[in-house]
Image (cartoon, rainbow, N blue to C red; front, side, top):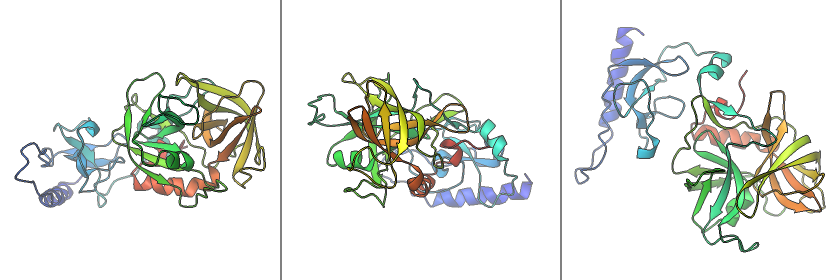
Length: 329
């Protein structure tokens, strides 16, 4: 990076920092001054950047002043300052790495298998599940996208209205509180068309290096030999192999984005939980969500494809890069 570019960008950081007014009556507020603002750096995907306070960056390493810092969101990187992160400015002249390069360097989404779903979560609410008299509070399922967003059904959001919500990963006792929810703007609570929703968590889910949340099949048809996810009475995750065909199993929920999953044996699925299907990559990706639990070994499912644009738009608003939820070739 040229020295005059570095100088100009350092000024930009200083101006943005000056816009953040420190409250005089709060001695515990974090100092937002970028301690490494004169140090050039490189992001994990090879882009030239500057070390700035982490609250000035989006999750995709793009400069965006005015962010809100939370202690649980500290991002550790190569910058010297404890609170600094390598961030790319919109006016920086840099060579954008190819899709292949980025998939090798950035944290990428993870596929599932017929008996493994590391990013599946149970969705809990205060008071348990009145229908099943389950005191644990687990009433729906979902899938973590990136590190802080959970995909579930809009009906699950409606079912938790007015309650405190949280999610929990299989085999973990850690609870992640839900900060806010958003339903698909095209969701129809009567027909259940576009039955998708996103939950924003209060803190990020920590993943192993170069791994993250679920891979979504936003172009993958919901059909074929798939696996649906559910939870048993002890809140343990269970997997049900199902043969999926387009169209609802019954007249109820017979929408254009519905599908029917039939199990050859025990059928145990949970509303809002992911349905994983094969794609052109190794492993299973999320192609749909469970809409209705099993009746006579068959469950009504919903495809993600008709909701793909809404999902992409919402994830972009939350600074979730596309490679965090899709395979980039």
